[in-house]
Image 1: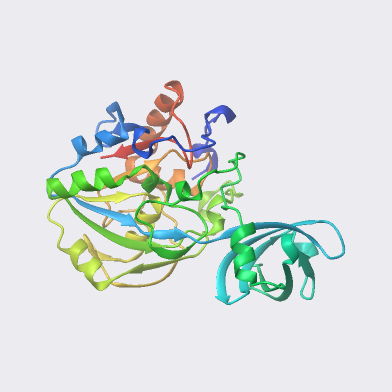
Image 2 (image 1 turned 60 degrees about the vertical axis):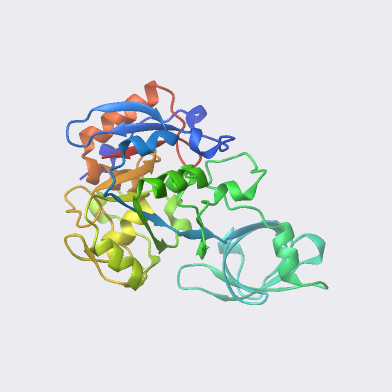
Length: 336
């Protein structure tokens, strides 16, 4: 299967550079994956398309990565994306330009914050040990910026807008953006209807933004991400009476990675590099809320596997004609 089959022309001006003032005012394209019928709605109307016996599954990961800009002690700009705090002042990070930053290098940031590269990781990252006259963690928090995707060029005024309202599990490098449309008011409406909800965790890695570079998608090596499903969450999922409605592609990968049979997941967690592509038989996910994805991406391949390439192509063509907002801060669609 060729990567070119998952390509389309995305005008730069249709990539949303900031979130809407109100999360639930995003547009919502309803896509019937059986017959391809399309409807144009607003996200706050999602309840009109949910059934009382549906189970909604959310990814509760929270973005904790932070981006620092500085320079090498020897000169030259440097960027450090802090991914995981190992201990106080010790972080696993991705450093750019990485090839020029070896073990022993010192990186200088604002307010006297300095980091020494003390080791490399198997994934090509660096281990940074921070030091300063003040508490380095406080300086990191003050200087750090939200690690927005590379196609967003506008600074985010409110960092909370790159978090879902239900984010609780620290460890992600990027937000599960399909969940950004949900508000406390929508959750109240879901509860009043008696629709069940459950939360699982998949920490999104920075590699989610890396393009597929091989023409034959079977040759693509999927990045690895950490996921977790509690025993209580697994019991709820496995006892679902109606549709299992997945909020986002990261939630889909989590559920399908944990699948042991039709509509049955195993509790626990681990690492997954599951690449869902056309021909994959979904065991858990029966409906999906998702944003519009970048051309030639594994995410576009995943939704094509779920709804069919022809239906996804039709939906994207319609969204482009109707000037929907695309990618992380953009509009949504409900594949049902």
